[in-house]
Structure formats: C-alpha cells, structure tokens
Image (cartoon, rainbow, N blue to C red):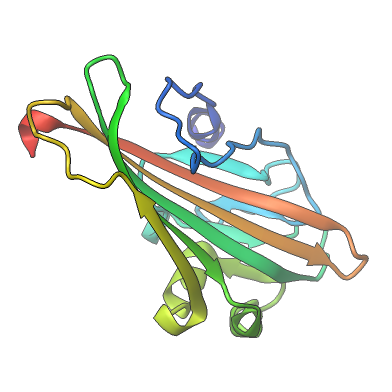
Length: 187
C-alpha cells in the first residue's frame, strides 16, 4: 500500500501551458539513499526520493522526513520557495498571475541546520523554523486583477527547493512540488 501511495505521489504530470517566466522547473525524481525525502517517517533503503509532487503541503502524518538511509551526515546549504497563484481560462491559458519568490538568507541557514537532529529533519519543522526576517522575497505579477468572468479556475503552486550537501561534499537538490486547482465558480 505504501509503495502504491509513493508511486501515486511521484507521478509527474506535464505542464498544461500555464507557464510564465516565473514557472519553476519541475524535477524528475531519483531514488537516493545519501540524502533524500521519505514519506510519513518510513525510512528504508531504496525508498528515498529527490522530488515529490503532491496537492497539499506535507505535514502531520503525511510529513516528509529529510534524512540519509545510508547514515550520511548532511547540512542544508540553501532553500527557496516559489509561491504562485494563476488565473486560468477554460483552455488552461494564463489570464493573470501573482508570484512571490522566497529565498532563505545565508545568515539563516545555520538556524535550519540546528533543526537537523540525528541526521534527519521533518519538512514541516524547516517551514516552522523560518520567519519573515529569515527570508528575502521578490514579488511579481500582472498589473490588474482579472475579471472573474475571464477565468475558469485558479492554480495554486508552491515549489520548495532544498539544497543539501553531505560531509563528503556531495551536493543534492531536493524538490517538493505542491499544485492544486480551484474552480472559479467555487470562489
């Protein structure tokens, strides 16, 4: 059952034409035992992945543990998030968008690394550790709010890129791609 759930989460769906200049590149997942993400705290060799796609921000029982099944120590060397809301027409063409790019400040990486205990940390712990003063942010978007008659749905996208390095200086890029849609008539 767990393998089926993992496979379901890892299905990579193509971008349906909603990209703009801020659209993050979706990573293809690889299995990795050096440092990877494990669902629900089930850590076993051969089940750690470098990229996940889901429709909710992982937390609680669905939280993601970042660790090493091979017992390797690691440190977080960078973390960024792209948070975007797009208004899409019936053909999935972008009508309007708003995006905020967050980057963890170099001075706050030590704060994240203090959360790594016994070579592991929960994704929700990383998010809860950060405050506004720990982030550099940049906003962009279309100048005008879209007319509610011109869009059919909203796409909410949050992409978390986490960069880690093992003590052997192996650099690993992890990505959590959270995407969901809301029908305009439900807004």
